[in-house]
Amino acid sequence: MRGLVVALLPLLLHLPVWSAPGPKSEPAPKPEKVKDWLQGEWVAVETEEKGKLCVGKGDLVQLVISKDQLRIVHDGDNEADGSFALSVRKDGLYDLDVCIEEGATNHALMQVHDNETFTIVVHSRFQPNKPGDRPTAITSETDKEKDPCGLWNPLLFKFKRVPKGQKPGEVIEAYQKSKKK
Image (cartoon, rainbow, N blue to C red; front, side, top):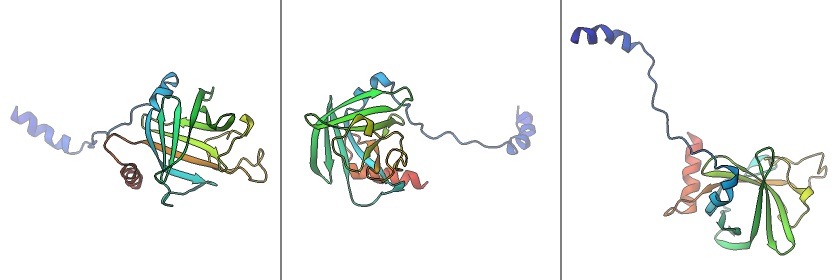
């Protein structure tokens, strides 16, 4: 046996070494489960405007979702409470309709990335608008054809779940550190 190990050792030393794969993110939930999956507290870990990342501007944006109710918290202050409706599209994205006041709906676009993150694109003036005003892509770039004057610059928010026992700021810090690696 020892002779076999000694004979194989030079071969083994010249083989490439692969490290074990790192932890993988859980896959995104199935479309019919997304509304249940959204339940809980989320924090914006990335924000984009006009195609540029706006991280580190001091704004802390959180979503707290319970059943079909949504609370928007900005820098620790409750900014708005309302309801939301979600419907899956043929392209795998979601139409997200947020109603803060009765009859006043904002039409947004949502993409689920994995089991811990999703992105929402809304118009910069988060106000009631028509379904036709919904952003058409997951980007913060202005749709020049639909909006040649750039009046409705889309804002992109990437949200990450806030685990129990963690503070939103800790989630943002861990996310930003992971992006630097």
